[in-house]
Length: 186
Image (tube, rainbow, N blue to C red; front, side):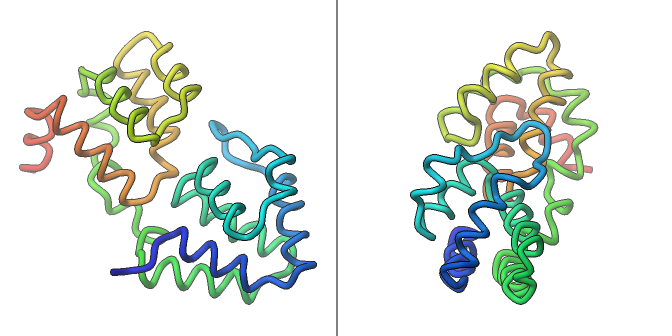
């Protein structure tokens, strides 16, 4: 079985010297992040060891975006060797970092936004599977049309790794089967 993004993050953080690890955690709170994400609170981050820090990165940024944030922070603190090693590890075993655009939900984004009619049951699944936080769930549900809900949902989906997108696709199949069968047939 291949290494997970969590494995790559833990190995990367373990490889940092104590001083660099401290710089990493400080910079993690200073770096610009994409809209739709929230920063990791300083309190839990200050007390976190390498395993806890990796878990916080995944909880707040998910797989794909978590790797991106980690690479940017490593480069910002001049840990370019570790950044290159982490990027190679995440691409070599996982493949998620380099080929996210190959996923079904990315290839069919426009059609999914335009044609998915039943969004709320999908949101329920994603919340239950912890792919969305309660706040994310409420934000998406508060929009007024299925198309706007899907647009908002894709703000989160864009940062997910292949495994999370597979879960999203499963929910799409469960609740919008005819549409997904039609798109898969193309």
